[in-house]
Image (cartoon, rainbow, N blue to C red; front, top):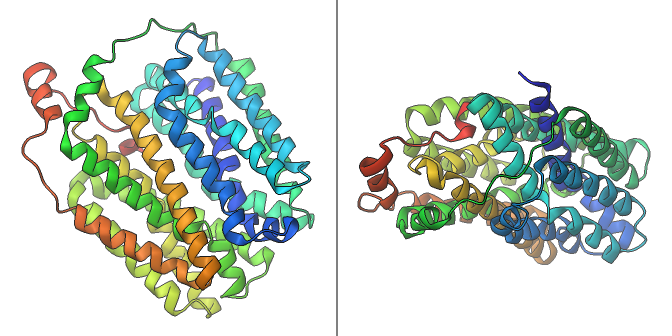
Length: 396
């Protein structure tokens, strides 16, 4: 496989580490700047909201610009924003530094996925997406551990900046110049918005991600306050969470290949179960190690479930547009979950964030039983192409 594909995967690793790396140091930032844990949670929420808003528009606004230049621009902004974050003297400055890269965040995904698909098809896309999985397994625990090792929250951002700088150098050296293509007509893409099942799936995606991140965003605080783990132990737990997530993602792909609907419902029920167990046994060290392992294995599959559930019947010509809507839905869900979890944590205690997740998962489970007549997208495919797009994540 071309080196450029691996460089794009490294870039994905860098931007996801930047987005979610803050999860591991939220309690520290809360204490450092004298803000509540729910206010600190806005460092994730604001990032996600910005991505959600910019996703449908940012690619079209930059359609006439060389794609390599844009990739390098995005990574350079991530390097700069992490440095600004590290030198922030107040919470407002830190928040601004977080929002800066989020504006261009979806642009990296749109371009890198397109390049990977053109070069190596679904296999190339899967390689780029591997950067996301590895960021969960290695990036987030690494930034958390760096802050604990040096006893300084700034170390987390310095490490994220270094990772982004390496990715920037790789993009600069190994990605060829890619002139922008002529702007494509969006008329056919927009017709997919008439499909009611698409909207149900997008709403379900928001519900799923909100449930996942209402609890995951505050996992560090939960392990610190309820399970009484120290910084090093929490870093190991986050590494375990991500490592099991890689296994879970692989198993989820196999299950989804067999039955999407059944796997979706099973995922929701399993995540409900594991979070109820975390609530009941949160104060017990050994049981929580086991619970967090299974939690991580189930949790990571949520991205894959949402992707395949939404795109399985989308025609090729509308897939890129639907993916931009999915990116927005992912980040709306993440920001909503972090917000709701923060409110509950602030007013009732961090142990109750799990109840928010369980309620959202239950609502999403009910939505999984909604059905409609044959979709517009499917009709178009039968009349025209008779070929459905295979979601890239399905090959992970």
